[in-house]
Length: 292
Ligand SMILES: [Fe+2]
Image (tube, rainbow, N blue to C red; front, side):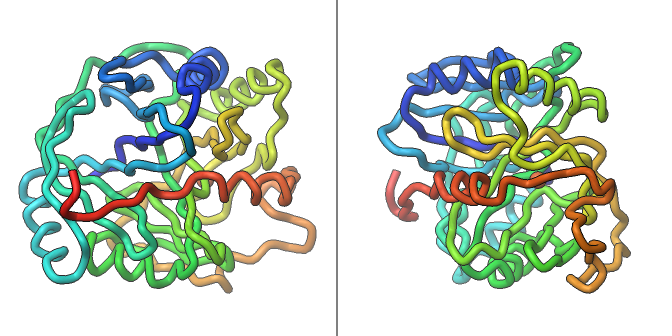
C-alpha cells in the first residue's frame, strides 16, 4: 500500500499549475477532461490533480494497493464505513473503492493503476511523502485508520497522530486541530540540498517559508512549509524514517522539545497565525456513497 496523489478542486487551476511547475518544481503530466495532472520524478503518473471549481475542496487522497489489500479493505469497511466501488479515469486508471473517514475525508484505494516512465530532473519532487489532515477528533480518526483501513499509528505528539501504511514512518497524520480540513501536503525531495534549493526558488519568487527549514522529531524528516499562492500549505520534505513492524509507538511524552525549540536543529521559526489560517482553507467535498 502506498500514498500516490491528492486530487483538489479550486478556482484558476491554470495559475496553480503554473506555480507548481515553474516554481515548486513539479512536471506537467496529462491534461484531460479539463483537469490538470502534475507529476514528480517517480513513475507515478501524477501526484497532484487539479480540477476547476468555484471553491477550494479536496476531492480525494489516493493510495495504490493490490487486489488482495483491496478485498481485505472492502471487507473491513462493510458495515463500518461509507464506501463505494470506483473506477478511475485519472491518468493511470485502476479500480477500487472510495472510503469516507469519520470527518468527511475521502480516501481512494486503487488496484491495477498503471505507472508511467520515471523522468529525470534535478529538483523534481519524487513523490508525495505525506498528507496531513486537521481533525476535530484526531484519535477517533487514527482509530478508524487502524481498525478499518488497516494502517498503523507510528507516533503521537501533543499536536498530531502519525500513521503509516507501509515502512515509511507516516504517510498520513491527523492534527489535533478542533476542526476538519486539509492541513498540508508534503513533497519528497531527493535530499536536503533539494529542499534547500526549493526554498531558494520560493524566495526568488518572493515567498519565505512559514515554518522551516528544520528537522522534525517523529519521522526525523527535514521540512520547509510554505503557503502556496492557491491557498494550501505545502511542504518540501526529505529523509522520512523507515520503520520496522516492531517500532514502538511513541507518546507525547516521548516527543518534547527544550524551551524555545520547535525542531531538532533548533533553527526554525514558525508563522503560527498565517499557517493556521491556511490550514483551514481546503475542506473535503460533499460525498455520498450512492452518488456518482
Ligand atoms: Fe509535514
